[in-house]
Image (cartoon, rainbow, N blue to C red):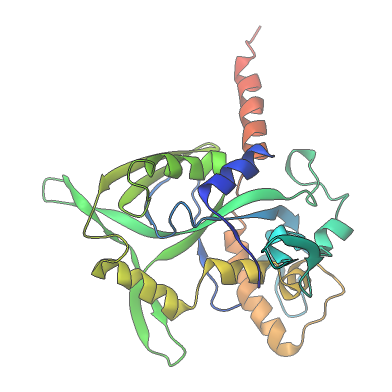
Length: 304
């Protein structure tokens, strides 16, 4: 089983060192604001290497080009999490079956992504679950609190459920998770309040709200989140395993990979959603810093 590198301290160190049901993803365009409640606490964030913005192969037979993403991210198959462990739990350098020979490392070294950087060079990303929230206003438009944004979900038996909307955030430490960590230093948790998250160009402005004792781990309201995750069969661990699997790599990157008819139908359904997800690229620490420098240089130039 993979050994996940968890926690904000691990994320900070990594930053400085510079499938079941599909999950939904946290995504904001510049100028947009969202309200969230962290469902993953600061010490349970999973930190792992991710290949960002990897060009995909041609659409498989039967999948329309406009339904196929031009680029995707992938969890690195050479990540330490997939190494076998010794009796003390330390990585041995040997990998679980299907891992340790990352296709992107082996075949895409010369493929350049953003800022002329090889897509074979992974970025450290922190992964956590967020509940999407919305403000509640009274008749005078005064904020009285927050409530869950909900969505409909149909289970395998065809029954429809209305559940809280839970998304996965895969973001860098310095550009995203550091602000959450700072907010949780006093109480030891980031699951006891709502946060506003606003994207301004390539930065996130993150502000913490007040503590809400009636909605945090162990309360009846919190159980609704756990029930929603169980109903959709979504977890960080399951998503990470899927996005690093030979099937995922084969489906989106390896032109030699062959799928049977059933898998092809699954690829078409997944690709349509993936194409929408791919429209919002995630910045890693290096990309965010490079963009800041580029913008600063542009605005420092005085017209003659």
